[in-house]
Length: 214
Image 1 (spheres, rainbow, N blue to C red):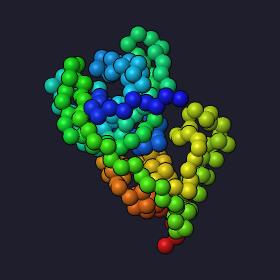
Image 2 (image 1 turned 90 degrees about the horizontal axis):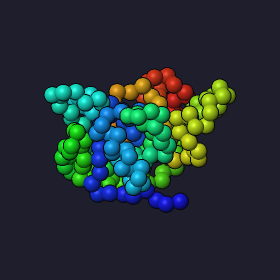
Image 3 (image 1 turned 135 degrees about the horizontal axis):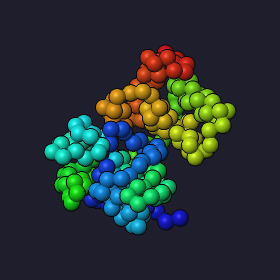
Image 4 (image 1 turned 180 degrees about the vertical axis):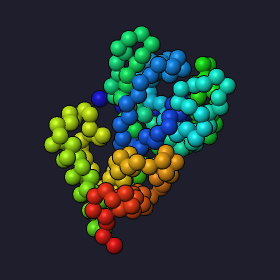
């Protein structure tokens, strides 16, 4: 299978959410600036960047100013359909994290960025005091399966990596009802172990699953 094209400059999609590496994101595309972008990304096998809005709306408003995070995640399009003219439905997979170094705005208000990659999470085994956090995630997945949720509609896809700190932390961070700035801070952390420890504390605070042992 051909690898997606990776660029040092890429188009950006500012959203009110956070895409984590390994995560999946469905999008409904209808703005002119993104319709052309998606066509070009699909044709070239290239990703685009998802960044988190701190000011402005996902749908461009006349005279509105958009402000977004410098840290984001590459999104590779895995599913594409166009049920009617002017409408695209896509599903994206988060891959590498990046940090923008400049963000010029192009025709129709499309943002692009010069960027540099952030290091991928190093594989870190889940320590004993956080195993319950990984087990709670597995139990949640099993609950969805018992409810008959189709595999393609699951919040993540196989293979699960329940023994890896970064993967478990990212999946919980996607699921928890946290403000976007909190999720963004978690995603940007260099340490997957610290990310999982913080997520475990948040789980205990929200009384979701068994808290980690002290």
